[in-house]
Amino acid sequence: MVASVLLGSLHLAPAAEKTKPKLVVAIIIDQFRYDYLTRFRTDYHSGIDQLLTHGADFTSAYYGQVPTVTAVGHSIFLSGAMPAVSGIIGNSWYDRDSHQEVTSVCDWTRQIVGAPQPEKKSACTDDDPASPARLLVTTLGDELRLAHPNAKVIGISRKARAAILPSGHAANGAFWFDDGTGNFVTSTFYMNQLPKWVEAFNARKLPEKYVDRPWPGFPNWKFRAAPGSKSPFSKLDASPWSNELIEALAEQAITGEQLGQRDETDLLTVSFSANDAIGHAVGPYAPEVKDMAIRTDQLIGKLFALIDQKIGMQNVIVVLSADHGVAPTPQQNGADKIPAGYLPSGIDETVENALNERFGKQQWLVPGGEGALYFDDNALQASKAHPEEVFAVAAHALLANPQLHIVRVYSRTQLEDGVAGDFIAQAEMNGFFPRRSPDLNLVFDPGYMPGKHGTSHFSPYNYDRHVPAVFMGPGIKTGRYPVAIRPNDIAPTLADLLDLQAPSGSSGRVLSEMYE
Image (cartoon, rainbow, N blue to C red):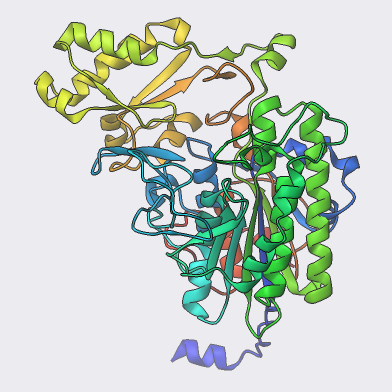
């Protein structure tokens, strides 16, 4: 009674109604460190310039899990879920049920649409039919379609995982590039026939025009595959023209699906993949990486120009981020007297030798880990030892060999019980999903990586974790925001801006400090 009297005496103004955007454009650049925004800032005059000039730039966005790889970053982008919840623990992993290595999106219950069906192999590959079946949580697009069934969600990338994981389960379509035909394809998870606008795009045969196009300023880069290759367009991934294809198809999607031009809010997810392929080859301080960043700025500006013409940028929310960063090449670090190097072979051998000596000869390991080890269940049973004892012997042997540059080992039993500690320990916990995760997770010295040339990303270190998080659109206040955030905050923030339920596994917070 008292409360009602008090409320009755107040003169409350109605809450301001949110401006309903017509379109959300979620752009994720594969392997794009945050410092690419600052180091190349004076060379941006188009789309990235617009975002930095008119958007909210969160300068301290750091991933909080390992591994820092493509599938994981793309799954977090619009789900807000850590691998510990989403189940997407890497680009690939060992599936204990099927006893084979699987990728994050391969799905042999489906078929490719738009290209011949590949031959099924003993392990999943990036050429296989794909779906979001292994993603166990909802995305922003799923929540949008649940609340507004007439909304459209479209995902586009060169890579299947980068088209599928951001767009989610309920997407109207996810489209990726087929190296064998040069077509953009999808799978029967989404549809049985490509939309007319995708068919028309494929009919233009643009990849045929690109494979022999030189990269101005970089004449040593060649993009035509070897004669007789079953994947004649496979080298296009490390070319500027790969991103041009992505942007052109995104334009076609806006026109073909009438995105943002109906009485609904639609979602377009776009992942530019060429930056990653080039960056792996030459590292973050190479001139090619700068050139690709500038070209990406121009492509985003080109996309914005079409959106402005068709929809009006004042009616669009844009977010820009990346799935991970990248380490400097060991050669670059070495020249600057910074410790770094390529890891020697011998990790598996070290483990096998130690376990054979202690428990008797077995085939202890199975393939499937990214900086991690899976043990054969039959070997564990035959050892008649508790699995943690086996893991402890293996970990001791690895840590005792300084040439391997392994500084920490976390066993699955440790992570199941929970480990406390610094940001690395927390990253291990955030990346651990019991049914899928490895038995031993390895942390290497900073700057050290597998391989013999180029560079990589997978670690808990800042060069792999620090990425852009830039928002632009109605209701968003321009400025630089140095507050520490996670990319996990992107999805719940967009959900709040759209008055949607946050995705089911989201662990992020709403970035309300940027609200007008």
